[in-house]
Amino acid sequence: MSGALEDKRTATRFRILVEIADRQPAVNQGEIAEAVGVTSQAVSEYIRDLVADGYVEKEARSRYSVTKEGVDWLFQEAKGLRRFANHVTDDVLESVKEDAAIATDTIELGETVTLSITDGLLHATPGDVGPATGVATTAASPGDEVSVTGFEGVIQMDPGHVTVVQLPPARSGGSQVVSIDELATICAGGDIVVATGVEAVVALRRADITPTTSLAAGPVAADGATRGLDAVVVATADLVGQVTDTLRDDNVLYEVTELADADTDADPDPDQGPDLGIEMDTEITQRDSS
Image (cartoon, rainbow, N blue to C red):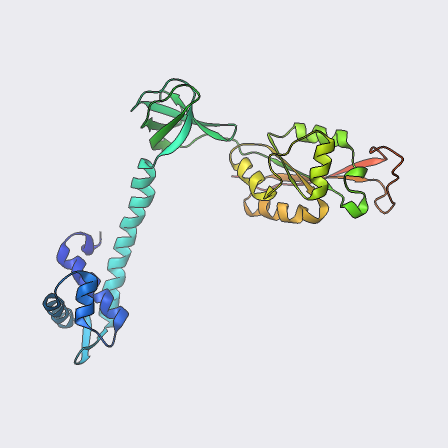
């Protein structure tokens, strides 16, 4: 452990040496005293000791510089402080932080609960029968939120899958040249449906489907997949790349399905229905979600 954490004198010595390194070569002892919270006389005494130990070199009146030995000592102390800080944030605070969960049954204050993910949301069940547990810091009735802390274990959850449905842009027929029935069938297989692009929104309206959102489709789908939800992203061809880039960056398993007219170069015939020689091409892209 860092000596700066073991006694007050080492901690003050560390802070003063840092202040000297930050201000060198012109060092105002009064400013250091104010920054550290000690008297100017105390700073003067500490500096004399640092010079005697070879950590600071006096060049002239009020002019000091930190030596190589002083820099090495600062690095060692800083590493110790960093290790301690990591221990606090990763081990201590991680276990005592609180999060909200949905109570599946009546939960009493201080009761141990088993944690799980259902429909993308954290749920708490009385008892410690699961691989991930916590302690309730509030009481709750079934269906209400409960605050949980003292997390232990890992919540078991299979990551979700994302299906990206690519639609042609309006200049190539847009929603008018895709099978709305096919689109509805694909969307029925997702836990959430998101849209990006006007053509996508219109196509979903024609299928009588209300998307979860038409904003930030990629991040929403990726977040859903990490919570165990299967997502369908309906996207205009021009915007598909933005969606798949986000999914790749988040290491999410996805596939791209293209719904388009068999002859995309031909102008759509307004006198015919939407199911004109439809082809469905599927490109599967897998990413290791572990």
